[in-house]
Image (cartoon, rainbow, N blue to C red):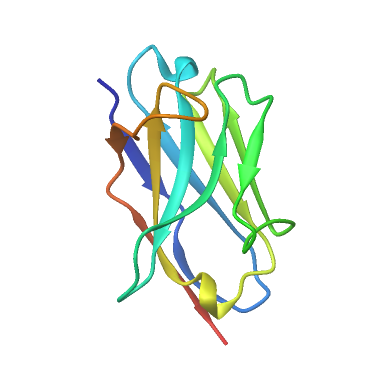
Length: 120
């Protein structure tokens, strides 16, 4: 069982930066692939980025590639999402999630989300 708690959201202006954090409970954090997702009002939840257990591999959605960076600190049981060059279209609730496998399977654990609002 993994419990996830996101933090770091807020209201910023276009072009600003934010760093989201997701703190995980449990001693097996390093055995999970961690992902970030987002859901804007009236839209489907969409994938943002994921990172392998060791942090050695990452994948990004095209919409955030080059602007967002996912990282993790297994000693702190925390995954981060550094967001630079924020745009109004990045406004959404951001969720972190965990799953066992890198390329397959469902995300079994989800946080409650943190709101990011980008004004133009």
